[in-house]
Amino acid sequence: QVQLVESGGGLVQPGGSLRLSCVASGLTSINIYTMSWYRQAPGKERELVVSITSAGGRTTYVDSVKGRFTISRDNVKNTVYLQMNSLKPEDTAVYYCKAVNYDMAYWGKGTLVTVSS
Image 1 (cartoon, rainbow, N blue to C red):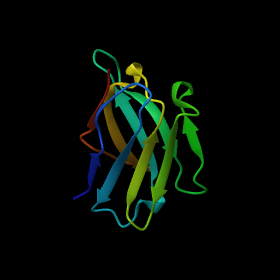
Image 2 (spheres, one colour):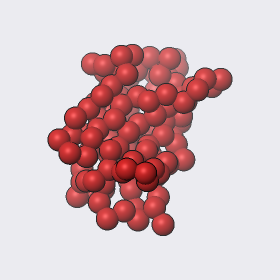
Image 3 (tube, rainbow, N blue to C red):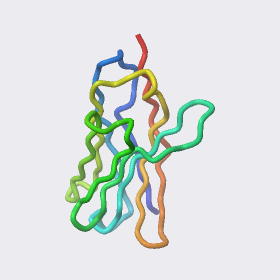
Protein backbone atom coordinates (compact mmCIF):
# COMPACT_ATOMS: atom_id res chain seq x y z
CA GLN A 1 0.00 0.00 0.00
CA VAL A 2 1.44 3.33 -1.07
CA GLN A 3 1.52 6.08 1.51
CA LEU A 4 2.80 9.62 1.36
CA VAL A 5 3.17 11.29 4.74
CA GLU A 6 3.86 14.98 5.02
CA SER A 7 5.34 16.65 8.08
CA GLY A 8 6.99 19.89 9.13
CA GLY A 9 4.04 22.23 9.04
CA GLY A 10 3.20 24.61 11.82
CA LEU A 11 2.80 28.22 12.84
CA VAL A 12 5.49 30.63 11.74
CA GLN A 13 5.80 34.41 11.70
CA PRO A 14 6.01 36.34 8.44
CA GLY A 15 9.55 36.23 7.12
CA GLY A 16 10.22 32.92 8.81
CA SER A 17 11.13 29.54 7.37
CA LEU A 18 9.85 25.99 7.45
CA ARG A 19 10.97 22.77 5.84
CA LEU A 20 8.32 20.27 4.85
CA SER A 21 9.06 16.61 4.32
CA CYS A 22 7.15 13.97 2.40
CA VAL A 23 8.11 10.38 3.09
CA ALA A 24 6.90 7.77 0.63
CA SER A 25 6.37 4.13 1.57
CA GLY A 26 5.09 1.23 -0.46
CA LEU A 27 6.96 2.47 -3.52
CA THR A 28 10.01 0.75 -4.91
CA SER A 29 11.62 4.16 -5.15
CA ILE A 30 10.45 7.70 -5.74
CA ASN A 31 13.20 7.88 -8.33
CA ILE A 32 10.75 7.06 -11.11
CA TYR A 33 8.07 9.47 -9.93
CA THR A 34 7.52 13.12 -10.61
CA MET A 35 7.08 14.57 -7.14
CA SER A 36 5.07 17.69 -6.47
CA TRP A 37 3.91 19.94 -3.68
CA TYR A 38 0.44 21.42 -3.87
CA ARG A 39 -1.33 23.71 -1.45
CA GLN A 40 -4.90 24.64 -0.68
CA ALA A 41 -5.75 27.80 1.18
CA PRO A 42 -9.10 28.23 2.94
CA GLY A 43 -11.84 28.87 0.42
CA LYS A 44 -9.53 28.39 -2.55
CA GLU A 45 -8.78 25.64 -5.02
CA ARG A 46 -5.76 23.43 -4.66
CA GLU A 47 -2.82 24.78 -6.64
CA LEU A 48 0.48 23.36 -7.79
CA VAL A 49 3.37 24.96 -5.93
CA VAL A 50 6.33 23.11 -7.39
CA SER A 51 7.23 19.86 -9.08
CA ILE A 52 10.44 17.97 -9.73
CA THR A 53 10.72 15.43 -12.51
CA SER A 54 12.01 11.92 -12.08
CA ALA A 55 14.58 12.13 -14.83
CA GLY A 56 16.91 15.05 -14.68
CA GLY A 57 15.24 16.60 -11.67
CA ARG A 58 13.82 19.53 -13.61
CA THR A 59 11.83 21.85 -11.37
CA THR A 60 8.83 24.04 -12.07
CA TYR A 61 7.67 26.65 -9.55
CA VAL A 62 4.55 28.77 -9.39
CA ASP A 63 5.54 32.43 -9.79
CA SER A 64 4.42 33.40 -6.30
CA VAL A 65 7.08 31.21 -4.62
CA LYS A 66 10.01 31.59 -6.99
CA GLY A 67 13.14 32.60 -5.15
CA ARG A 68 11.62 31.68 -1.78
CA PHE A 69 10.80 27.96 -1.97
CA THR A 70 13.11 25.12 -2.95
CA ILE A 71 12.16 21.52 -3.68
CA SER A 72 14.64 18.69 -3.31
CA ARG A 73 14.50 14.93 -3.27
CA ASP A 74 16.44 12.16 -1.60
CA ASN A 75 15.76 9.03 -3.61
CA VAL A 76 17.58 6.83 -1.10
CA LYS A 77 15.35 7.99 1.74
CA ASN A 78 12.26 8.11 -0.50
CA THR A 79 11.73 11.64 0.73
CA VAL A 80 10.93 14.95 -0.90
CA TYR A 81 11.51 18.24 0.85
CA LEU A 82 10.14 21.72 0.47
CA GLN A 83 12.28 24.46 1.98
CA MET A 84 10.17 27.56 2.45
CA ASN A 85 11.85 30.86 3.25
CA SER A 86 10.58 34.42 3.58
CA LEU A 87 7.12 33.11 4.30
CA LYS A 88 4.15 35.39 3.81
CA PRO A 89 0.63 35.26 5.25
CA GLU A 90 -0.64 34.33 1.80
CA ASP A 91 1.42 31.13 1.99
CA THR A 92 -0.98 29.88 4.67
CA ALA A 93 -2.49 26.63 3.41
CA VAL A 94 -2.55 22.89 3.75
CA TYR A 95 0.42 21.55 1.79
CA TYR A 96 0.08 18.23 0.01
CA CYS A 97 2.64 15.92 -1.53
CA LYS A 98 1.90 14.09 -4.78
CA ALA A 99 3.72 11.32 -6.63
CA VAL A 100 2.98 10.64 -10.30
CA ASN A 101 4.26 8.00 -12.68
CA TYR A 102 2.33 7.64 -15.94
CA ASP A 103 -1.24 6.81 -14.89
CA MET A 104 -0.41 6.24 -11.23
CA ALA A 105 -0.92 9.13 -8.84
CA TYR A 106 -0.72 9.21 -5.06
CA TRP A 107 -1.50 11.96 -2.58
CA GLY A 108 -0.59 12.57 1.02
CA LYS A 109 -3.07 13.88 3.56
CA GLY A 110 -1.37 17.21 3.96
CA THR A 111 0.31 19.33 6.59
CA LEU A 112 -0.94 22.73 7.69
CA VAL A 113 1.25 25.80 7.36
CA THR A 114 0.08 28.97 9.06
CA VAL A 115 1.96 32.21 8.57
CA SER A 116 0.83 34.78 11.07
CA SER A 117 2.16 37.24 13.60
